[in-house]
Length: 165
Ligand code: 4NP
Image (cartoon, rainbow, N blue to C red; front, side):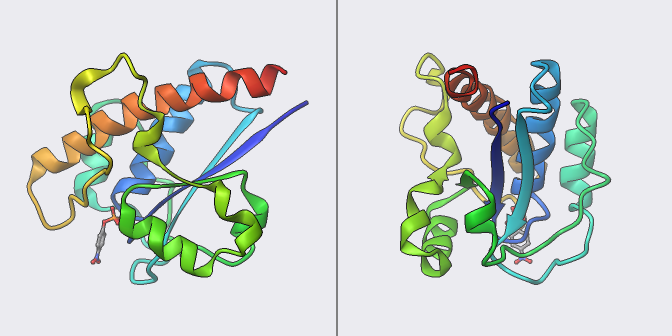
């Protein structure tokens, strides 16, 4: 049985990447692909290792039916580049930080989340990044959720052919 393993990556692993992980787990479950698409998340920084997601991220996600409570912050580790098929970053700085520590042979695994936005979704034309909501207001967390929901749907659609091949 083919599987694909994905690690979502942001800076702190307490706002954006746990949100992407929670949304993706939910959508993968709905699509009956939980045994085929394996999901995790990590941060490029180490400030929040062992911490639960930010309260604002957890509550915003909870209002849409995603449970982030079991997740804990961790920092990306050398073995992750071997272990995962895709490392999906939230912004260009995350991509740069990952490339710095990634073995050259694994660099193609590093992608940006918004690359997976379905073309038909015109809401974020030319938006490349999921912006860090940490120092902003509540609307930033809603925007992160909107982006994660749309891009994760596109990601599942992009993965289906290779899982079924
Ligand atoms: P995240 O947000 O990268 O989406 O988890 C941040 C969380 C914490 C910090 C920065 C960004 N921080 O500076 O502590």
